[in-house]
Image 1 (spheres, rainbow, N blue to C red):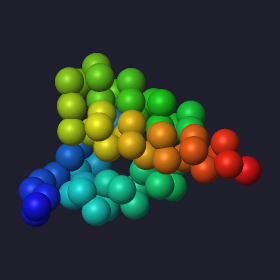
Image 2 (cartoon, rainbow, N blue to C red; image 1 turned 90 degrees about the vertical axis):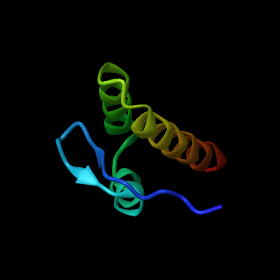
Image 3 (spheres, rainbow, N blue to C red; image 1 turned 90 degrees about the horizontal axis):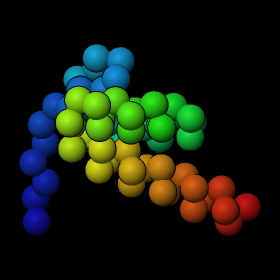
Length: 66
């Protein structure tokens, strides 16, 4: 299944496509991810919310494995 690639706005007003968004989020700390999550919920940006939650869970899993 092909993923639709459209720009998503971040809390810093950046418009990023899916690949750039994943790269951007991977560089954020857990605290910064929570800020993005708060923004996504306040702005009702459900696409951003899903991507942020996935990255948050990924980082938490890595943290728990250490």
